[in-house]
Length: 131
Image 1 (cartoon, one colour):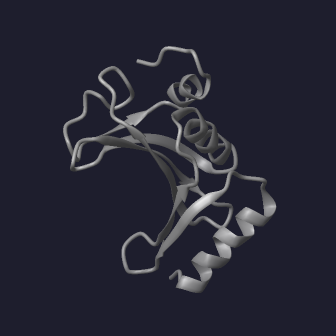
Image 2 (cartoon, rainbow, N blue to C red):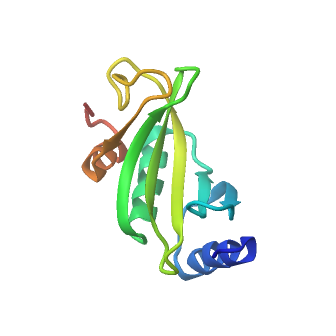
């Protein structure tokens, strides 16, 4: 069982071992079920968020990406989910505005979909069109 201290130690060790983008907040959940960590990137523009998520993905095992349209419907949370070396699950995310042709535009409010890391790579490159 992972305790709050175990989870905090896991994220601290990871942040010490890797040079990663600044975080706005970190949340740990040690309750029954799947304990884990979520971390909100301190970035506000889509290319910065995508670049930050890709940096995190490079340091995690079994990394996947996801788009979730918030219940109010006005923005999309882009996330990378994976495992820290200590086998703790982490979700790193950032919010981008909903645009008619952007990532997640086809999602209903509170809907989510897996996206490829390639989509994040395109978003990280300003001037490129993302579908």
